[in-house]
Image (cartoon, rainbow, N blue to C red; front, side, top):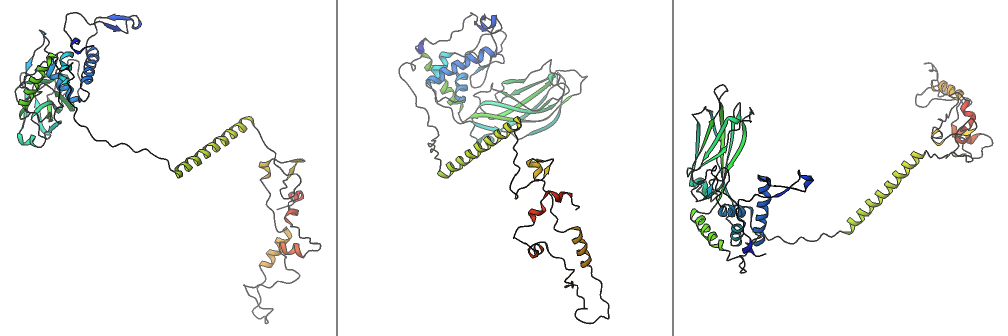
Length: 432
């Protein structure tokens, strides 16, 4: 398809498209309008622009649309021409998009300068908003010194952030006047909006001042279209924000003339191409190499994960199938468990071993007697009659023998530990 065959003409024929609500998506309609129809059409045209000029930025696309849009003849629309020569209406914006004009302009377009901005201080007013026919008007002057730091000369977007209290904010009408005198209706009255919260840090914006000089006095006018039965609203504070570039008004007009010369299509099919501006130099990313220690760590973590998974699955399987094991000892005396009813106890019962006493009841009585010997009389003489709390005297016949000492001193000692004898079943019947 040749670019000279691509032409968007405005005719009176309706736009026909499919409609999902008609015949389950197979029907057609002629009433497809609004932003739902405009957005895909605009996206397709911008795609054609990027095809001939891939390095266009979002600001380049906006500038080209403003420069190439055509006025739509509507008897109900009011068109105003701003200081830069652009026509705009509140109903149709800058006009109709024309694919032929957009593509030709994109072919020779050079990028706009960097985005510049200016933000005024927070302007605190605290003024009441009167009822019509009166109005509240506040202003702020932007000087060359204010714009010197950013280098802004011409406007693109103008934004106003307001904080207003009002019992019914739908009654308010907000207008912004640029330094050239062109008016922007940034806030219209809304009959269905009865919200009593007003506007809290609410931002309104306009593009009607596109291309005009940024220096000058900006006026904000607020009107209340309600009646006197409601309390008056109040403008607490507002702030002005400007967005633009370092383009001068003369450079804007020169760019307009250049685009109009390209509308003949002479640059589309002759191989003409402008170089894209250089972008950022992004170094190539070095490939990541896994070290030996990292690989070992990953292998260990993987093995642990596999082991834990197998263990958990085995535990769940044994629990669901009620699988038990009888691990009681039958012959060895070293792990002998107690018997109940002639049968071995389970592993859990076998773990509850009886505490083994190292002294009998008779031995405990002898120890208590010997632990409290009678106090000697004051008149007793001799070493054997003396008494010392550190070394009490015991008789040879009444001395209590220790557990291991008695076991080794007894007749027939064969080196067997008496603990195994104490674990016999008859110990269960003895008194603790």
